[in-house]
Figure 1 (tube, one colour):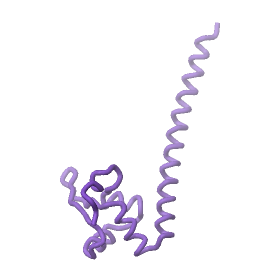
Figure 2 (cartoon, one colour):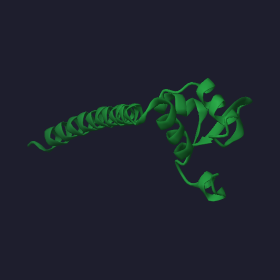
Figure 3 (cartoon, helix red, strand yellow):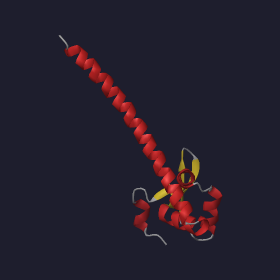
Figure 4 (spheres, helix red, strand yellow):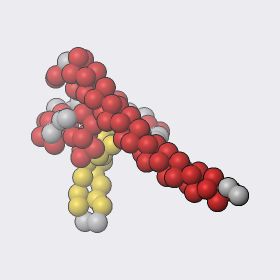
Amino acid sequence: MAEHGEWTQKGAALSDVTAKTEYGVSRDFIVKAIRAGKLEYRDGAIFGNPYLRILRSQLEKCIIEELGEDYLIKIKNETELRKVKKEIASLKKKLDVLQNRKTVLEESLKP
């Protein structure tokens, strides 16, 4: 099973809710894998709401076994595309603000 250090590495562990968002797997899929001994987990709670923490590497192995490597690659690419689109939108907003500020400054410098 996993080494203790893997739990503390940034991005190595994720919640069942994040797993649903990033990998499209349900809580039932995760619970089934835990009961089969394929996934280690830790209990967590935020504001009184319980969740399961699981290791990303183990989850990806389970997904490959159950749903296939093609599914995993497709889902990871879709997730990355969402992040890229979000970043592009954010940068466009920042660029618009900077261009407006530039215009104001140029106008103020005219004689």
